[in-house]
Structure formats: structure tokens, C-alpha cells
Image (cartoon, rainbow, N blue to C red):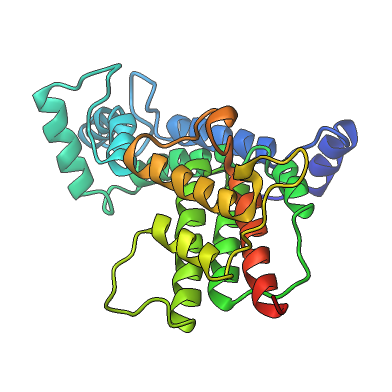
Length: 274
């Protein structure tokens, strides 16, 4: 329940350092403690008006919240830290089958899931400020704008590796559209993204200009396109993350900035006569 006076007191004390993420995480922790206390899940006897047998079953099943959480987020019921017994695994599966019916377990797992989502949002305002410097006024195609919007949304939410995949997907979708429109590719023809980038370069869809002074080859539109391709491939084929900066795009922001520059080049090249 919202309390204006309490909110005002908290905000006045921490005006500059106040963070909605911290407040929401604290609220979730309080709810977790409250629910466990309400059902006496950490006590030796049940609450009033709750049959001992029902309470004992609920208490036993509440210990499975963590493996249940792992189950619904990773599709595995075990972890390297604590390997559940065969009996526990069966109990987890039974609990998952009755998930909707046992609302207390559903509530506790939901709190853990939401806490994870909020936790990943830490630093969202700082990430938003970085993105502001990349805002463009020139119009993009609907496909390009949609991929760029999704990539930015993933970045703001803290899903870094997924940004690389989305940027790669956006790059390929846009180049495919442009090559099809130019008659350089047919719908029945198969072409790798690497070849699409080179074809776009050779036919003026992507600028083929040489690096300027102090600029590296990979910082040109063609070079950035290949870096996006490699970053996405790395996440898909190697591991969910980014290589060190000296070996490619160093983080999700660099991937978005690279895609933004490539898209700007593609549509500027198509707007301006060669």
C-alpha cells in the first residue's frame, strides 16, 4: 500500500542517490519475508487456523522454491552448488505440475523472477544517457527501425549478449532487403551475411571509402558491418558475451553504435547520388 508520508521521507533523505531499482528490490525482499512469516515457513508450528498437515506440506515444498526457480529459468532442476536428490527432483516436478494451484509457491517464485528482472535494470539510466548521443534524425526503413528499437530495449533492460544477436539480425535483414530491391539477390538464392556485406560494398549500398586518418579499417561502414556479424556469431556459436575490445566490439553499446552507423550509411548512400 502506498504511503505518501513515508515515500516523501525516504526521498527527502536520499534525493540524489534515490533509485527506483533499489526501492523495488527492497520492496520485494520485504514481501518475501512477509509471506514466509505469514505462513510460518521458518517456524516450528503452523499459523492459527492452518491444519498441521497442510502447513507441513507447504513448508516442505517452500524449500523447493530455489530449484523451482532454476527449473523455470534454466529448464534444469539441479545446480552445481547443491545437487538435489532423486526424491527432491520428483518433488520439484510434482510441485511444478501443481504450480498454478499452490499459489504460495507461485508467489514466491514470481518474486524471485521479478527481482531478477529488476536487478538486470540496474544502470538503465546511465545506459539511456549513452544512447542519447546516438539519436539520429534521418528516417530508416521500418525493418531497420524495428531491429534498432529492439536492440536498444534489450540494452536498456541489461540483456547485453542478446543485443549482439539482435544487431546481427537487423544488419542481415536490412542488407537482404536492399540487395533484393536492387536485383542483386533473389528470394531463392542463398548468401551468407559475410557475402551480403561484400556485395553491398561492391554495389554502392555500403560505402566503400577507405579509412580516414586515424581511423582503422574496421571502423569504416563495411568494417563495422563485419564486426557486428562476428559479434553476433560469437554469441550464437561460442558463448553469451563479448570479446575484449581489441578483438572486436567490446560491449552491447558498441554493437548498437556500430549498427546505427552502418544503417545511417546504408540509407544515406541510397538517398544521395553517387
